[in-house]
Length: 300
Image (cartoon, rainbow, N blue to C red; front, side, top):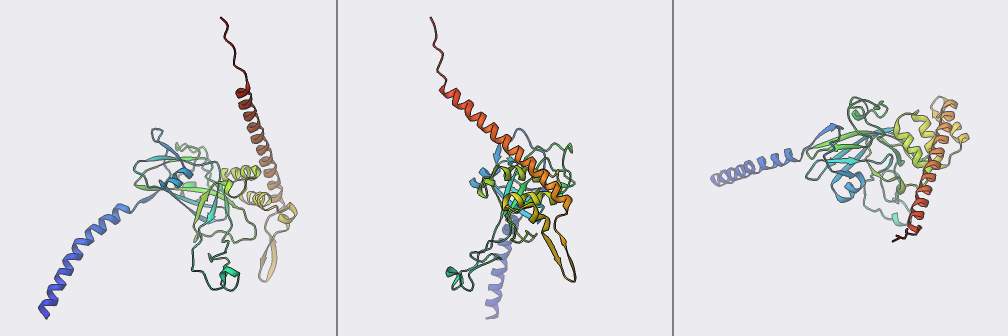
């Protein structure tokens, strides 16, 4: 009996020794190093980030640091390096964990959902912003959304990055919350990026998020504008918004100066939205005129 057990143990050891190298090799093959954004290579094919996600070529994770920004992890799952193009601004929605449906959930009874990912829960606020201009490799791309990252001379383009197949690119983004009253994002949450149109078709909001993405403005003022446009909070409501404290008086969420800066930013966003609308109308009219213009008869 002892000899039999020894033989079985020897066979088991040999089997494990044959399997482990293969498993280790596969693990090393699948592991990809996370690096900061690299300069785009003009010789590479360009792909829109959303088209890449839809085709399964790209995997993009949005990891918030806080309400004002965080990092994108961009993985190229294809067979060749690509230049990934980003729009001037986008939104981010929290990826909620799925839990089994509890009794009474369908009728809104106990266990019927709420924050934290239960069915029916809405999760944290939707974020809006973007990567703005070229990220500075020592600031913006290192996870500091407030870094300057403008005119840094590192050769990065505005809104697109070269993504190899053997590494994951990390790019910083700047953001503002778009659903006042819901929880703020935290580093423990994972978001997915989406087109702005999936949240709102308001052109003023689109221009507001472009301003947020640029990183050229006071983040608090940008947040005030975002709530004003997306959630229709008045300037008076924003000015009166307070942060409660235990054992001491509450403090204002936005200072008077911040609200004033926010109003100026809003005016800029409205102006830009009108300019974009005028360009769109002019382009449509030109196309219509070209299509309806009679051809010139050729004379003998």
